[in-house]
Image (cartoon, rainbow, N blue to C red):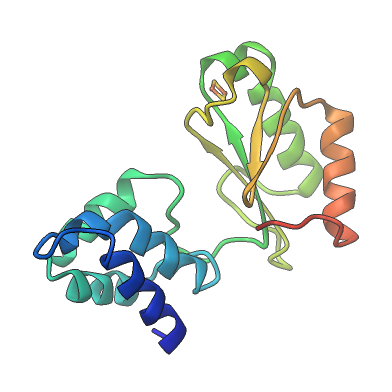
Length: 163
Ligand code: FES
C-alpha cells in the first residue's frame, strides 16, 4: 500500500464513527482496487482486513459477492455486459456473444495482449436504455453491433477515458 493510498484510506475511515471501521469496507476496497490495476489479490484483501480490524473472510465474502471487485488480473478494457432481463429482452446476450466472437475470447476471458475482456454482470441500473454495458466508469446504452464495433475501435485508438 502506497503512502498516497494509505492517506486515502484514512480519509475514508474518517467518514465513519470511531470503532466502526468495518463500515468503510466498500469504499476502501474500491480505493485499493483502483490503486492495483483494478483487481484484488488475496494479499491485498488480507491487508484490508488488517486495516479495518476484521477477519479476512469478511473481506472475501464482500469481494466475492459484488461483481465490481475482481479477484484476478483484468483487461485494460473490460466490457461488462448487463445480463439481466430488460437488457436480454433487447438482445444483450446476443451482443455479448457478438463481442466475444469479435475479440476471439469467451466470456470471462481476456485477450492475450491484455487489452480486452468480456464479462456478464448483474443489472447496471440502465434498464430503460438496454442493452447496456459498463466500461470503466462509463455506461454505453442502446447498444448495437455497429456501436460495439465503434467502441472497440475507439479503445484501440486510445480514445476512451476509462475513469
Ligand atoms: S436490466 Fe440491464 S441495466 Fe437493468
